[in-house]
Image 1 (cartoon, helix red, strand yellow):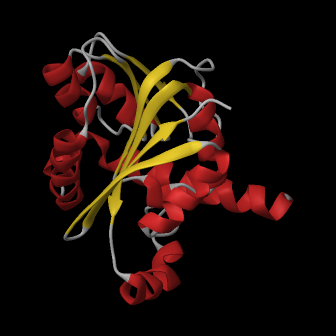
Image 2 (spheres, rainbow, N blue to C red):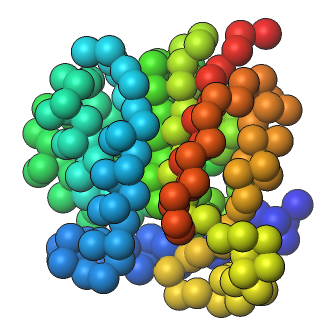
Length: 210
């Protein structure tokens, strides 16, 4: 247990340091431009009513929430491991609520949200099972979870995962859509849609109340 906790904190600390350093110029970095395409594709998949309460997990500087607010008029919330990213997200989205936190212990109440999003960040999560449990806790009954992440076919994904934990950015593991779905179905989610386009996968799931 102690080794697992230490490992989780190590990945989170790598991510925190890396994204604090990138925060002020993130949109102009290669990564910022790369992940913008994930946000655009995710916006094509999201279907939600006006005024929905939305939590973006690993929200970065709040760009995705800004996009959703412009289209859907959401009530927006965000968490990120990087304090500096959270500061910038607050500037970009003055009417929203942001907190610096990891995905394993989210500082919001049970059943607070109609929709959760994770965009180009799931492969950073050191404990995806803990996040899955939090997602179930945070979503209202029949609420939706959208995970947009990097997609590789089986063998390239295997090779990448051999070396990914050496990353200075806190990357942990790339997952197949089947692996993502299996974990969340075990906790009480229903598979919705899987979209794969090039290097982008978007998995949609719905919370089913026990």
